[in-house]
Length: 292
Ligand SMILES: Nc1nc2c(ncn2[C@@H]2O[C@H](COP(=O)(O)OP(=O)(O)OP(=O)(O)O)[C@@H](O)[C@H]2O)c(=O)[nH]1
Ligand SMILES: [Mg+2]
Ligand SMILES: [Zn+2]
Image 1 (cartoon, helix red, strand yellow):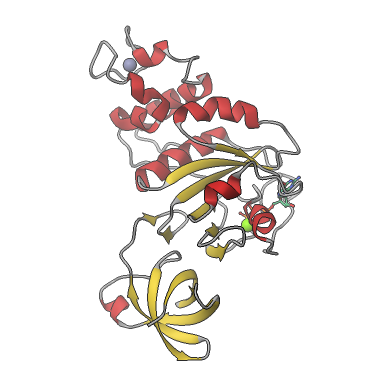
Image 2: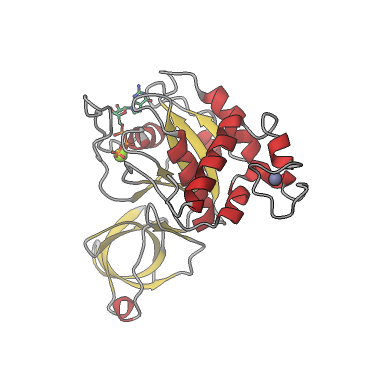
């Protein structure tokens, strides 16, 4: 039985890419999946039976390495949080919310930050200063200039998903990286927001390295999250972790307490904006609100 990768799933029809044949089969899931309540996901490795030239049935799914809730997909090695240097103006609060969400939902995927449209605004250096101490690799890219800052090397041999606000340039970047012509769109003129051009998550084999897949996904317009306890929040700001055991009070909230090792390191490896966000999110959680 051939084995392939589910690269797309719309309305119960799945496109399964068989790597050896470089061929895509359109498949339905066999009835057993519905009976056991399993839905095949983009990114799944599937065993298929071929019924005619380019159609078949999904018979088995391999065990998943992970499952991502938003965008919905499976077996992801790298989540690239896509952030625009300009047009539309990126929201760092939304980025920070997404980073927490992604690391909480998917502890076994690497998270990187991919800045797009860098030819418009040189923000990459500042972004590196803020996010490198938190352990996030930052890539400075421009689809217009076809400059990728080594992103291809980081993605080689891996399966990645590009996630971020609508209009940040996810599809454009995938087009530039993979020589594709996915639909992209201008921003709406009045409010400079994306138009939600990409409508479903789809995985593309990348031509620049073997066994490399990149998923394009629908952009989001907002991102909020409420599944985290305030006492766990600091852990999701990874740059604070080296200091968490050095505060005078073991239940330190890292806000008003004296002898707080986190506060003492704001301005060193903990960037001021990240610390401000930590406090903002902490208060939002304390009030029972969503962080966003
Ligand atoms: N100047 C500049 N514009 C870019 C770049 N990349 C994308 N754009 C523009 O940004 C707009 C949105 O690009 P898309 O690729 O459709 O954005 P997206 O993130 O896929 O949007 P959704 O599918 O709605 O989530 C388009 O007008 C692109 O031409 C870039 O590197 N530089
Ligand atoms: Mg798109
Ligand atoms: Zn503290």
